[in-house]
Image (cartoon, rainbow, N blue to C red; front, side, top):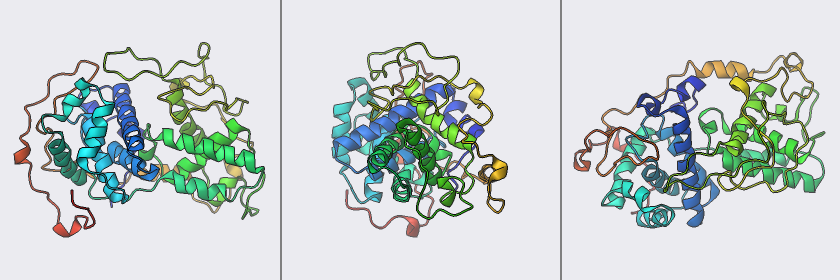
Length: 382
């Protein structure tokens, strides 16, 4: 199976960046696509696993293709359509398109072409080839619940912390964290963040042994504080996005936080009120004064609780060593024979983008280059 975890430098050198779309714009397109999948799935009463799987497909797809060639909303519908089958909550393609139509402006819906159903169905084959038929995806939700059951403390505070962590997991789908870290690590980091914001301090847990210096040591060995801090800040950055210039078809930006941003982000360990925590950064802002970390750096120790790396068990595998091993993995190459342009895919961006190459005739899409036995056998009739 392909490895779906990437280094930061790979995430900054995607096909979209190589195609002339700057990194910040690509991040915005990813946020908008992920938000659209969640909004569409919510309106269709799909489960959180289905929506999360669709978002992961979306992020993986654009590690091989450019936003210039494949409009994000068409891809988002295709990812949700496929995720519904995989998670056994299938929805008809026409119903997804109908829901998408109710959420999009006329200008954005024009990217679906004259036959939206055909566009989504055609793109599904490209999506399947791109993700190498690696359809099963794990999410932090199950690990979040598993870890929370082992924690001891006030039940009300624990439940509040879990609910807040669940919200952060939802919002983390708008970032590329699913392309950087396993769901276990993301779950630990966002539980840690929620614990800090809700002032829930874990002092004891089920299964604790002498070698466990922190509660997560029994689940994921040697997650460093720098790593936790970086993951937390990537999620918190969603709540401190600068207001973009509003175009007629742009979604409403999140309201700014109170007061001017400080020169440097405040430590997460400082007391903040979690009251009014939004379910999504697209609709509200968390009441925490935040700003970008200078050069993405961290002060020594960061959120450290006083335990240094040298105090960690010597027989454990360091997470930072695991990071280094990611670079040695051979990521799957772009799928050969897959067109970069499909019929009816004109670009539609709020910023000027050069014209696309000639439209690729949908009737000439090459046959899948995979063994028939590799195709899923459980798809319901369309």
